[in-house]
Every structure is written in C-alpha cells, then in structure tokens.
Length: 199
Image 1 (tube, rainbow, N blue to C red):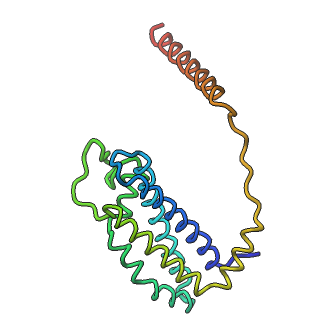
Image 2 (spheres, helix red, strand yellow; image 1 turned 180 degrees about the horizontal axis):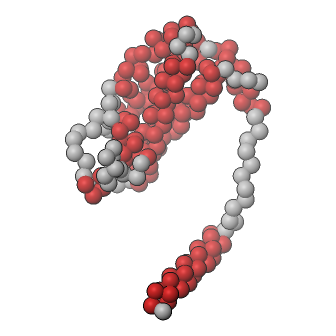
Image 3 (cartoon, rainbow, N blue to C red; image 1 turned 60 degrees about the vertical axis):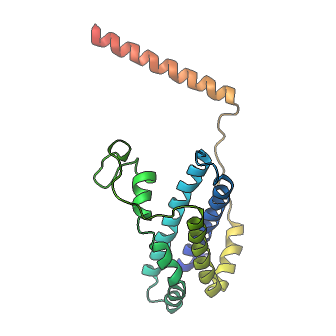
C-alpha cells in the first residue's frame, strides 16, 4: 500500500500525541517532587514531542495547501494550534536546553553563561495538561475528517513487520567486564602517549 501524505502525517501525529500523553502520565506521578530526575526527563521529552507535533502539522499544511479537506481541518483546529503557539519559546527551549547541548543561537553554553530573559513555555502541570489537550484535539479533528484514510492506515500498520534488534550484552556483569576492558585499553593508550612524549 502506498500511503498518501495525509496518512503519512496521521501516522506521525497520532504516535507523537500518544507519546505526549504517556509523558503527561509520568509528569503527573512525579509533579510533587521538584528534584525528580524522572520528571525532568519526561518534561524534556514532552517539549521535544510537542515541537515535533507542530512541525509535522505545519508540514502537512504546506504540502497539502490545495486540499480542501486539509484546509478545512486546519481552520477547525486553529484555536488549538494558536494556543500551543502562544508558548512562543517552545522551539527555542527545545533547541537550546534539550536538543543542542545547552548552546544558544550564538553557540554559547547557557550552563556557564546563564540564560537571560524570560522564557514563554508551559509553566506547571496545568499548562502541560492544556498543551497535551490541544494536541489531542488537533489529532481528533484530523482523524474525524479523514476517518476512511485513518482506518485504512491502521489496517496497514498492523501488517508491518517490526524491526528486529541485534542482541546486546546479556548481563550487567558482562557490561562491567566490557567497561573494564575499555578502561584498561584507554589507560594503556594514555601510558603509551605519555611515554612517547617523554621519550
């Protein structure tokens, strides 16, 4: 089966939106522990996902701008997309603090140079609920308009063979042995390098 652009985007948008909901579940469980690393990871992932969701939504709109049904769907979903876009620093936050090694647009490390200015991103659990709710509504509007294409896509996805993953290290003990081997190798290289410098 050859997927249409709409089906291609639906597959991505429903996956991203479902992953956003899973992040929200984790954040809800961890929201009272301000030092929770799990909360921080889930929150960072949520920001990545919402940015990806909005990028895919915009890509669908630009590639299908002559499709009357897409134009209609985008109009109906506009209150939700506009609300997500009100968090105007989502992309900047993703780029600087999550995806690009803590470097801002000038390439400066914000961990040691600080971050000036106020960020306009979801602040607190209620904002995250609203953001995820908006993404859910956008996805629902899309699949309601394209229900035939959605159902055809779901049937197709069930037939796809999942990738097999190469077998990895079997035990934690084996992992530690491999790490010890690499440490020894690194130390040997360092000793050889020092010997060559002094010799």
